[in-house]
Image (tube, rainbow, N blue to C red; front, side):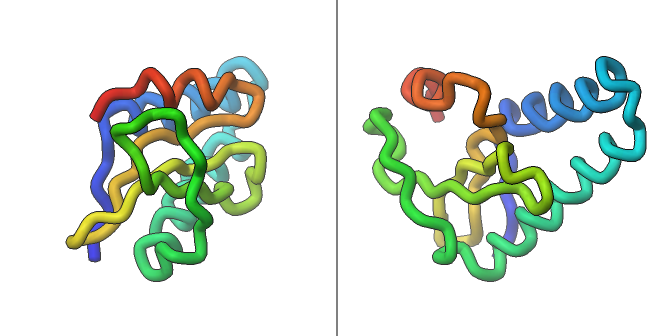
Length: 107
C-alpha cells in the first residue's frame, strides 16, 4: 500500500508548519508536527480501517475517513481508501470550519 497526497494536503501541512514555526516561534514543535503527520499517515497506510467514516456532505467522498494526527489530536487527516493505498484529501485543524471546507473540496 502507498500514501497518495492531494496538493491541498501539502498546503495544509505547510500552513500549519509555518504557524508553529513563525507565528508561535516554536521550531521544535513545527518539526514534531510534521513528523507526527507522517507517522499517522504511515499508521493509516497499514491499518486504514481503524479510522471511522466521516459523514461528509460532499457526494464526491461517500466513504471519507478521519483520524487525528499523533500528538496533535485537534488536527485530523481526512482520507479515502483506494485499491493501492490511502489518498489523503486534507489535513485540517478542528478550529477550522471542517464541514464547509470539505463540502467545497473537489477531487
